[in-house]
Image 1 (spheres, rainbow, N blue to C red):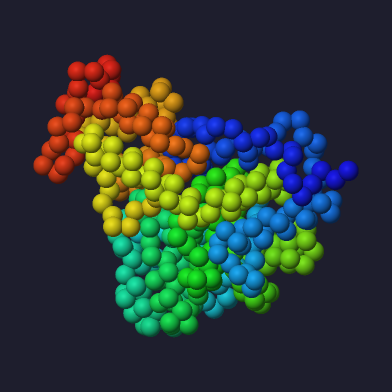
Image 2 (image 1 turned 135 degrees about the vertical axis):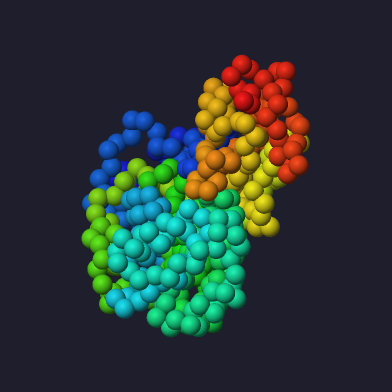
Amino acid sequence: MSPYPAGRPHLVDPGPAHPGPAHPGPARPGPAVRPAPGEPDPCHPEAGFGDLMTRVREKVAAVCGGGAEHTAVVLTGSGTAAIEAALASAVPADGGVLVIDNGHDGERLHAVLASHGIRSRRLQLGWGAAVDPGLIGRLLAADPTLGHVAVVHHETSTGVLNDVAAVAAVARAHGRRTVVDAVGSVGAEDVDVARDGIDWLVGTADTCLEGVPGLAFVCARREAFEELAGHPRRGFYLDLHRHYRAQEGDRAPAFTPAVPLFHAFEAALDLVLAEGVAARGDRYRALAERLRTGLARLGLGLLASDRPAVGLTAVHLPEGMTYERLHEVLKRTGFAIHPCQGPLAEGFFRLPTTGRRGAADVDRLLAVLETVLPAPAADADGRRSAEPSPGTPAGTGGG
């Protein structure tokens, strides 16, 4: 009997949401997408796995907004692996890339290209700054060798969304192609590979898709995947055309895949397709608004943005309160916050509203914060001061 049934009786039944940690990394998946213990050891060369992989690829393309002309390649690896596969494969030998950099994830795009010796022009806007389509258009007009534009949709280092539809429109107007890092957004934020004219969209099984970390994907038109045959082979495992040829032509993986993760990913994809991407975004947005309202009530400022992501909020640390101190106190209550990076590392921390969290989880976090934060006396910039409150446990106040 094949261990790859079309359904998923091998998965445990869905259960109640679990608050999980409060960090913004991989979303804690619900029990419906966790492989149950004691399952038979699957073997990927069997024909049944090809069917499973093909279903997953089709569902990924659907979540990304792809039409009949689109498909997806699924890789065993992190989101960074898929980003590297897309960038190293999509750019021809004499090509260049305009990189839109307004945070850590944008910096990563530039670093990946540099590691392969691919020429790039790095547009450094500043962390959290909005993209400027007009400026992008002028840079493309001035350098016709920049055949691709690489941009992050949700810049997770700041919690800011970039207008990738506007970037793609400018690129298309100049005859260029776009590579979009949607690792932190696809599945909840408003991004659509067909509607927005995105040439290459990269995502991962976790984060907004609420799957198990370990799988990532690239979605594009079949024609674009076919064109990769004429591009230089800049890698072996991350050769996107090699994976496409195996998955599309042979209905088999190019290399040994993480088979149990494919089962879990299909379960996660079924959940998001049943819920609807827009509905999931609305669910996250409601939690984010509840969280941000509560943080404001506590006197905590947020990183200013007119395009905040629904799945992540960057929060000011109170004056005098170090991240390490706040992290340790919250960890003892079951919440593991995450630091910010780069220039924001000293003054901010990050809180997510992705995964199987609910309003009760947000309220519990806010209640815990209220007991450990300094008294709500704001300074001139609206940030909470570090005067300890009477109820603050020893060692958790300012100073």
